Image 1 (tube, rainbow, N blue to C red):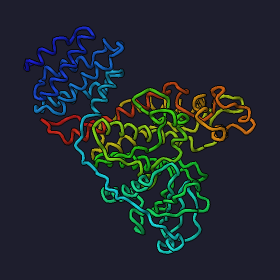
Image 2: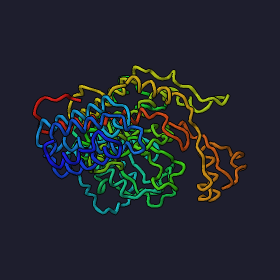
Image 3: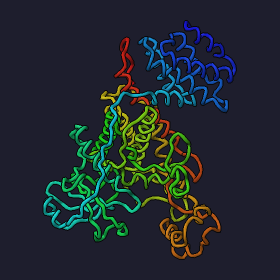
Image 4: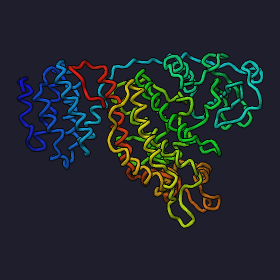
Length: 520
């Protein structure tokens, strides 16, 4: 190593765990301040430590491998010498493809979390005072015909080749959430030119299409006093889904794959434009304790916790034949770490939805059978079609985020599919517990309503005393037992590697190069 500081700080490499960790930590701080310092010898020696598993059993091994991976990431992205940058980049990729332990996890994170040069989108939502609307007159103006019907909290009228939709604000929501959805719908329509993407168009009857329409008959949340709603025009298949459980609505395999590709491509495309959809499907670690948990029960994929009610999460994914939807979940992209986190969540949500497609062939086949055994629905799965869906998602995402055709995919798609079918096809994990502390936080009416909502009969609920003991509830299927670990960690690992590789292609295409590089 030519740089004197690097030579000094590298003395501990090759030694015991503490010496290696401290050397790598110090090296990372040096190259962070002096990105021109790394040379070929530096990259080679740090790569050797990243690939070496002799310290993998140490309690803090993750921290050591993290420092090694960050050293290479800094050199790959900031070294003024293209040959050194290429060498560091290839070293990270080699670890991602060839390793299978904690060093691979940290190399993947370092690769995924590098900063990405993307636009910064600024929401510009004015202060709003929605006007009162007379719906009959409004429907006449918009060309709506026929009696409306409710789809969840949205009232829908036919209107020629489209539909007019009135999306009602939930009781627990703020007006800004509907305003955000309207603003992002317009922004995406202007900035994502894609013939397959048809975002809804807020009507210009009021600013951002927000009106007051209280007292709607059949409204699913009639207690909401404001009656605030968003009115927009959408394609008639806007409320169709790739895993639609309604009789006769499940798409054929070709249409299913097309929806998966389109959603993956648009997720990647929006990231490249500086926008992130944060809820392709709602992912939770624990929903029943959502009021008590400081993290609101939201799933954190970096931790190995179980995934709550995976089939319920996928039931109405926020994408379909027209592309993405429900833009109140859109946010402006920030750091490389946030981009990587969002990309992994996209992958997890898309792959879960792919698995749920097969369960939608028989949505009533779930839970336990008459003998109390877990339902086995593995026969509903087509391994070849699921493998094609996984491949389609990764390829579509890379195409969206980097504008590049994939050349190399993450290894092990067939092995992942086998594990997905094993865990998604058998409902082993159905149970969760309503803890005593959660019961005591409820009044009696809420307590009984919770028991009814989660499957207890009035007779069974009447026999329960609030706060006496934890109450088991069959709310699954879940991916993992209650307060346990994720039973399908391969899904998270595959998603993180795929996301990191897709983002790395975007970064590498924008980086200066000394020559032809392997595409990933």
